[in-house]
Length: 461
Ligand code: ADP
Image 1 (tube, rainbow, N blue to C red):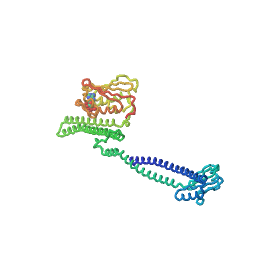
Image 2: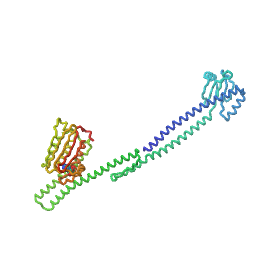
Image 3: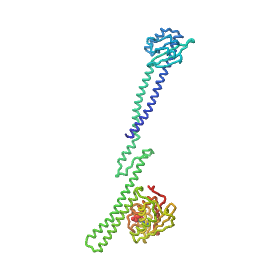
Image 4: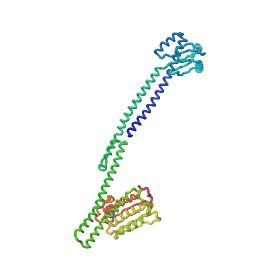
C-alpha cells in the first residue's frame, strides 16, 4: 500500500474514531436527559391532577373525560390516587389501566417516598402527596412518544452526518496527501531519468527548508560525489590506457623494425634490451596499479598488525638498491629508542613497504648523485620519517598536484615513471591514519615528511 493511501486511511480512521466517540456521548446524554425530563413531567402532571382532585374538588367523571379526550391526541399521563392502605380514590381509566398497582408497590412508595421505573416502554412514577395533613399515594404513567421520536431523529441525523463526514474526510485527506506527496512523485520521476549517461542532471530543490527539499539536496550532493567519482574513474582508465600504450607501441615498433631486414647479433641485442626495458616499465605499471587497487580496498579487509618501521625501511632500501644497483639509500636515527613500541605501528607491512620504496626511489632517481636519506625521529605518540634528497627539487606549481594519480611534474624528463607512486603513497599513509607533506627547493632538494601514530589501531575507515 502506498504511503499516500496509508496516511489518508489513518487520518480518516482517527478522525472517524473521535467523531464516533463524540456522537456516542451526545446520544447517551440525550437519552438520559429525555428520561429525566419525562420523569419530571410525570411528577408535575401527577401533582396537577391531585390538586384538581383534592383542592379544586373537580369530580372524578370530569377528570376521566378530560383524560379520555386528550388521550387520542396527546400522550396523556395516566394518574391514579390511592390511600396509603391501598384504597383506590381515583383512576383516570381503570379499564385501560397500564400500570397495575399492587399492595407491595404502594408499601414501597410509602417507605421510599418516591419510586421510578419502566413498564414496557412506559415510564412510571409513584410518589407521596399530602393533603390536609393526610398522606396519599399517586402513580403516574405515560409513554414518551415525542421524546423517543426526537431521539430517533437525532440518531438518524448523527448517522447521516457521520457517514457524510467520513466520506468528506477521506476525499479531503486524499487531496491533501496528494498535494503533500507531489514533490516526492516529481522527484521519483526525475530520479528515474538519471543514469550513468546523464549524471549531470539534478533534482529540483526550492528555497524552503522542508524535509522534501532537504532530501533533494542530499540526493543532489550524492549525485555530485557520484559524478566526480565517475569522472575520475574515466580519467583514471584513460590515463592507464595511455600509460600502457606508450611502452607497448615502443615494443611493437622496435620489433617491427628489427624484422624488416637481416640484422647482426649486436643489433638484435640492442632491440632485445630496449624491449626488455619497455616490458619492465609495463610490469612496474601493472604492479603499481595492483597496489593502488589494494590500497583502495575496504580497510577492514586489509590485514593490520604491529610492525616495526625500521625493519620495513631496511627491506624497502634493499629492494630499491637491488633493482637499481647505482642507487644509494641511507637510514639515520635522530634519537635512540628505549623499547620496541617506540618504533612500532599498527599497519600493513606490504603496503607500507610499497610507499617507502616509492619515496626512496623518487629521491634517488630525481637526484644527480642517486642518493636519498631517511631520518627517523621517534616521538612519544608518533614516528616522523623524513625522506630527503639533494636532487633537482619540485617546481612550485607542481607541488599541489604531485599527489594526484598519473600526475608527473615538469621535471619528469629527468627520470622515467608513470605518476602513480606518490598518489599510491598518500593513499597508503592515510589508510594508516598518518600524514604526508612535502617541501622542496630547486637548490637544496626535496623533503617528504611522513608521520605515523603508535596508538592508531584497527579502527581504520
Ligand atoms: P613518477 O615518479 O612515476 O613520476 P610519482 O607519483 O612518484 O610519479 O611522482 C610524481 C611527480 O612528483 C614526479 O613526476 C616528479 O615530478 C615529482 N617528484 C616526486 N618525488 C620527487 C623528488 N624526490 N624530487 C623531485 N621531484 C619529485
